[in-house]
Amino acid sequence: MRVADLAYLDLSEAELETYRAQIDEILEYIGKLNELDTSKVEPMAQVLSDDQTADATLREDLVVPSAVAEDVLKQAPDAEPPYFRVPKVIER
Amino acid sequence: MSKNWTISSVREAIAGKKTSAREMAAEYYRRIAGQNSKLNAFLTLCERRAYAQADRIDALLAAGKPLPPLAGVPIAIKDVISTREVRTTCGSKILSNYIPPYDATAVLRLEAAGAVILGKTNCDEFAMGSSNENSAYGPVQNPVAPGCVPGGSSGGSAAVVAADLAVAALGTDTGGSIRQPGGFCGIPAMMGSYGRVSRYGLIAFASSLDRIGPFARTVADVAKVLQIIAGRDPQDSTSTTTPVEDYSAALNKPVKGLRIGISKQYFAAGMDEGVRKKIAAGIELYKKLGCEIVDIEMPHTDYAIATYYIIATAEASSNLARYDGVRFGPRVEGDTLIAMYRKTRGAGFGSEVKRRIVLGTYVLSAGYYDAYYLKGQKVRALIAHDFRKAFEKVDAIVTPTSPVPPFRLGERVNDPLQMYLADIYTVTGSLAGLPGISVPCGRIAGKLPVGLQIFGPAFGEARVLQLAHAFEQAGGATV
Image (cartoon, rainbow over all chains, first blue to last red; front, side):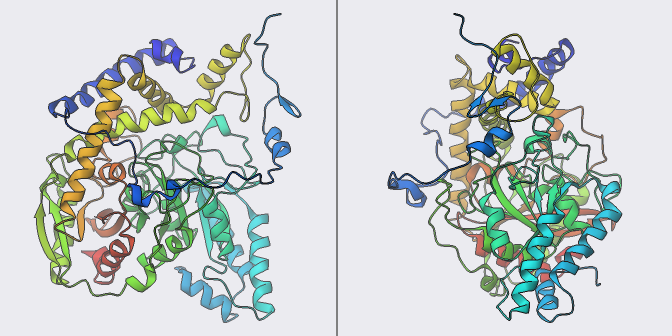
């Protein structure tokens, strides 16, 4: 399953086999949507109607204090404040 | 102490100095200590925070100051909602050690209103499930139907309220995750309209669907909690400025003459006969209350699950990309950055979450986007249109919450599609963004709870609560 690569997800052989069967079954079920002619339907890309949308006008772009960097870094598995540390990504 | 506290009885007892907020919290922690090992409904308790808040309430009273509306009320919070300095796992191993640096707006508003947060409740991993069996921390027992699931994904929140381990709880609903467990545990449970309650601090599953809402023992208490958490929050651009109605004031308005829509598409083949009978009795009760029952057509109902599993998984695959072993959670080392991502995610997510990430990635991938995701968005528009047409003729729509009563633990775990179909009557309102409540509607053979669902038009929370309250007061729980 190439999609597992796209999702950066390591799956075992057993998982791949189970998912393949289950997802085939789910996709077959989803196929029932093709019974509907939607050629003249606009996709619903937004839940709220325009008059309910609070951010119809944009807020002012103001600087507000946000001193959370230390707390955030505390949650990281490998941090060297003020940075997160990850395996090397750039070859010299 | 009496067993069944409500918001008003807690507040009166504290105001009348029959007890203190501290003693009330202690009483609930004693109950939790006695029952949680059996129910597995709380994952984390926050006694220090709870007692500090209780002491603030007791100090207000001692100083002769007025008590806020939820003064001293013990409340539980689903573990997908962020709580500052209190572990928040989302029911997942990938956040097993995560301590949020901030509070969700809903939590802050509850505490500002005087509520005492007891702890965090178990749930399906990242709120993905209908039985609470997808939690990395084990399943929750249904306190009123032993051996059965409590429903999901907010199974812990439903269970703690049903077992009297909290007076109210917050859950989240993406496809039915508040209403279905409310129905399975025999208590009222509600989601407001999309945009009604701020989601700041809610750890995202599917952003066009996720909502926060309350569980309580009475509809009046559901109304009181929703009142506090509803309303615009500048921290959440999807929360609206639409005015919040006075929910408690709406409860006792007469329901005589209100038009209730019933759609045959919500009573399809495969529905449990016991559920069918109880819902029919519930509809009879509304007739007795003087409501007019109107037949309506909801032709796209049968397409809702397929639509939901495209949109929800697509959004989940995107939202869950952030769990990569860099900023939070345990990391599994790899030789390269990508290998580290892959191993961390492969080890940290449970099987349902991985299944949905794979499905969501698939429906969004090049070559399939139009066939699946775009198609799903179009059918979503048709489902929303069904509701808009119906609300031209009726004030509310009544359906079963679930086509089946609570099922046995383990009964459906190996068949994801069957598990998904348990949400067939709740996902429609989720996709359309409408408010919905589940209220108790009798028990099959006196044992298995049945939930009756009421949908209202967008921002029609007051109408939904009014009809739910009338049903409860007329004896709906014992039809």
